[in-house]
Image 1 (cartoon, rainbow, N blue to C red):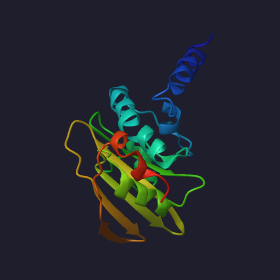
Image 2 (cartoon, rainbow, N blue to C red):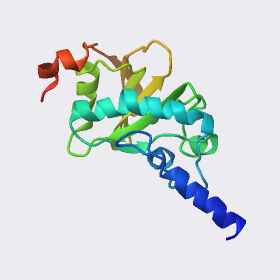
Image 3 (cartoon, protein in one colour):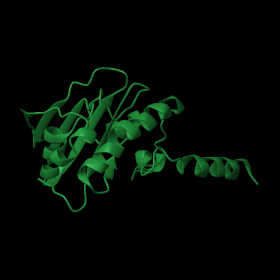
Image 4 (cartoon, rainbow, N blue to C red):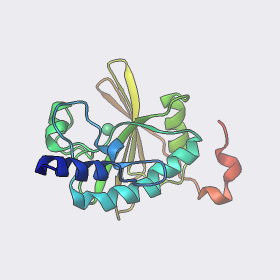
Length: 179
Ligand SMILES: [Zn+2]
């Protein structure tokens, strides 16, 4: 086996790494451009904690699978897609962001459920609307008090909206049923 084949094998093992029950490292590194987008190894524990504390609970809260559209971005990818230089998508061991949609649910409904009916320690949730497309951006800071900010970005204009903090769902199961 050649050296590059061996590296390929190692890479294959790495991309199948499971961050949590429903999310893999591969989804976080997805990239449609012709260069690799590999997260630094020191970010992996942070992403695993993010999945456990934020993404899995969001999936449970919405009652549907979450489809990630953009997660980790190396600096090159962030530049190519027009991200701001200090984007949370360019993760550090202490912060990250994911963009996602929820098949079978409008972005508005998912946004409202997260910002009005969740107890989650989200830093910011943003309903982004750009050029006819829309998605949710959720960012998180590890080990810091969550700011729990809800924003709408509508084709260049920012609006702040309400983020209502709920008690943990175990005691409030009936409150986060269907809207
Ligand atoms: Zn984003």
